[in-house]
Amino acid sequence: MSATYQRGRAWVVTVLLFLFVVVNFLDKISVGLLAGPMMDELGLTPAQFGLVGSSFFWLFAVAGVAGGFIANRVSCTLLLLLMAVAWSLFQIPLAWSSSLAVLIAARVLLGIAEGPSTAIAIHAAYKWFPDDRRTLPVAFFTQGGATGLILAGITIPYITAHWGWRANFYVLAALGAAWAVLWLLFGGEGKVEQPSAQATTQQRVPYRALLGDATVLGCFLLRFVAYWSLALSLTWFAAYLQRGLGFDHATSGRLFAAIIAVNMPVTMAVAWWSQRMLRRGTPSRIARGRLAALMLVGAGVCLAALVAPGLGNWQRVALLAASCALAPSIYSLGPAMLAEVCPPAQRGALLSIDASISSIAGILAPLVTGYLVQNATGAHGYETGFAVCGALMIVGGFGGAALINPERSKQRLAGLQQQGTTVPDSRAAHA
Image (tube, rainbow, N blue to C red):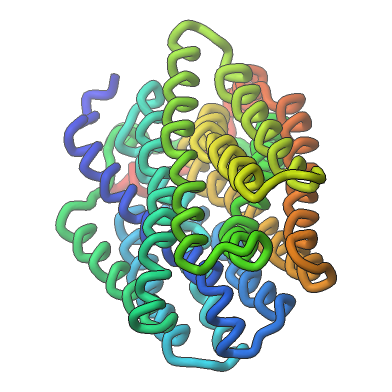
């Protein structure tokens, strides 16, 4: 184990990253939970609202890739701080304006600021933990996403009922600013992988080889189909509970929170089981790859089943909850597999490319479902959209399982490194 590993300090940073992800997901879900009052007050059609929902992801991928390459050379501490400040600023136009164009512009800017966030947070955590200790902290702080969604399901309907839907964006701005202060006081850059003064080069492999690797492509595929489900839940789950199944605004918010809460113990249990299998000598392609794929196939089956005739409202809610419980495991297992095969000097970029490719699903899912909802009556349009997502998850899960083999990929990419593909590391040179 690295002599620079500091367990207590590492977990302080992990808790701060957990809170960072909480704020991130509160920002993401806010518009989806306000679908009803926003459409009613602003006179938006489902297709227009789908446009607002998808606009968050228009430049999300571009910003994510750019941020990842920057994270290879710039302190994660600074990047995380700048992102949190930007999140706060971009909430204000959402609170002030009634213009569709302004709403879209504000969500686009927020998407740019949030594009690299998860990948950089994982990259930052990996600087604090050695490889054999990374699965659980990442699984823990990524549960900030579920926590943020639960808090949103409880608080956003309450705030809306007492102060109107616009007040939510002022609260979100304050939360982002508060996190930035905490990060300034207690955050920091990890040193587990920091290069020594003697190490003046870091090995790399050509990006065309890295991005063409089967394990990398398999991880990209699994995360893409999982993110289709996430984008769908952020934009349309609450509206489905209200307008499709007939629950009132407050009840739908509580149900949404309960659906999301189910995934937290499941995701932690899967991460623990994966790490246990690895320690017992199970190959990573099974302990991480096949396990993540199996979870996604199960989630897809649950969503596809929503179109089955004769189901009651509570059975449909149970299927949504099961899908939300199974899908998120890829967000901790996928980055761990990418980190296995990728040189540390290129990890920030690869993790961000992974997140950015998956965010394309964030553009497509709200729009596709919005048009299905607009052209159908009652719950049918929503359920058709969910079934499309389920089919994608099933196909993607089997495809990812066939592609992923970290042990084989490590051997192949290590061979490229041994051919002498190295670059100067300016940080090491000036250490």
